[in-house]
Amino acid sequence: LARGYHEKVISHYENPRNVGSLPKADSDVGTGLVGAPACGDVMKLQIRVDENGIIKEAKFKTFGCGSAIASSSYMTELVTGMSLEDAGKIKNTEIAKELCLPPVKLHCSMLAEDAIRSAIKDYRTKRSRLSSAASVDAAQPTASASPAA
Ligand code: FES
Image (cartoon, rainbow, N blue to C red; front, top):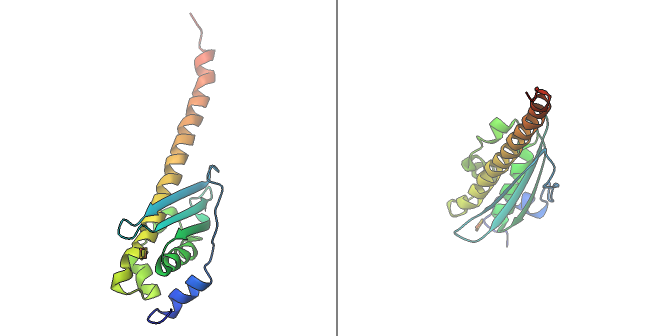
């Protein structure tokens, strides 16, 4: 079964790190859900971010091949403690290199790159929605306090 795969892939595949889910509705959680058109594999990657934009926690669920599972497991380890900015710059080739994925499995690591980007985007969209809601709230008392001449 494992023949031809690098031991790092096997290790992450057999003992994946950070499997699970974070509460999607939490305001400090970003969720990325992506699929690989080539094979139909699906990866969900979630991050919890602190007020300084540092990823505190990452979880994944991957319905896919061993390389996709290994890539997402490795990705969660890699991004924990990273700033959103740095995490958004991670390339699938770095993951493929670390796990020694063969060329035919490159798209599996691409899934992990897409997933972290999508999680970051989701987090940022959520924050900007929250902050515009907050500024509307803040603006309201002023508006209602203005004299209704
Ligand atoms: Fe499709 Fe690996 S074979 S993600």
